[in-house]
Length: 257
Image 1 (tube, rainbow, N blue to C red):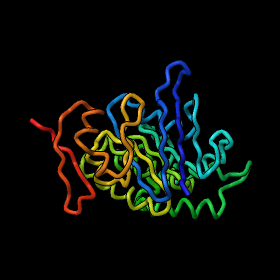
Image 2 (cartoon, rainbow, N blue to C red):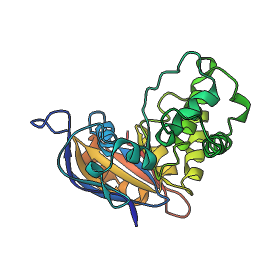
Image 3 (cartoon, rainbow, N blue to C red):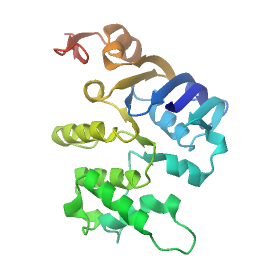
Image 4 (cartoon, rainbow, N blue to C red):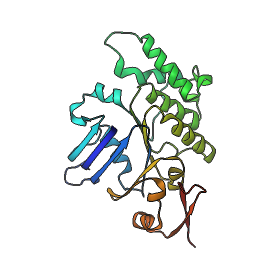
């Protein structure tokens, strides 16, 4: 059963100027999906549409067979977690405090965190391997450390679907690779969708790619099928050659002189 089904989606910040235009695709349980495309192609708007932050003009979004408009905020937050590209550290919060915020959809009014909440937080902290940071102030963390904490907060929501907007954009290459490897491991418990500027990094680690241009779907499928000279020319207007790995399941582009 698909975790996410998007059909003929048209969405944007104005009904007269849609940004996402007639997009259809689905995400199965356990997939790690990369949304790629040039600047202004609608990658972030698509993510924000899935989590209900951008108005849907037409079409539909279903999450675990539930229409998005039929889910209230609490129900949606128990199914989908969103990590935006820019998330500011909160003064006075320790790492554990911030991760505990992920349990907000489960809190009852005037109640303290429960054993289930603490177990979920401890599990998320262990999954992201940030045990050594739990008593640190979040304002003291490096960019790579804070990105892990932000993802741990999202995992504490126990979502079926995890959305990340440009999770590696402000990290050096070492942390980019480490984080992508970690995300690939995390998909065993859920589906993950992330936007990427780096097409080669997305093709290396994702199980499926969605290639956009000007809000329209250029290609969707396995990285080997999406990363082709023809698709890259359509999306980016650059000529490339493609190199395949030994099992021919992954590919990367190389710019032609």
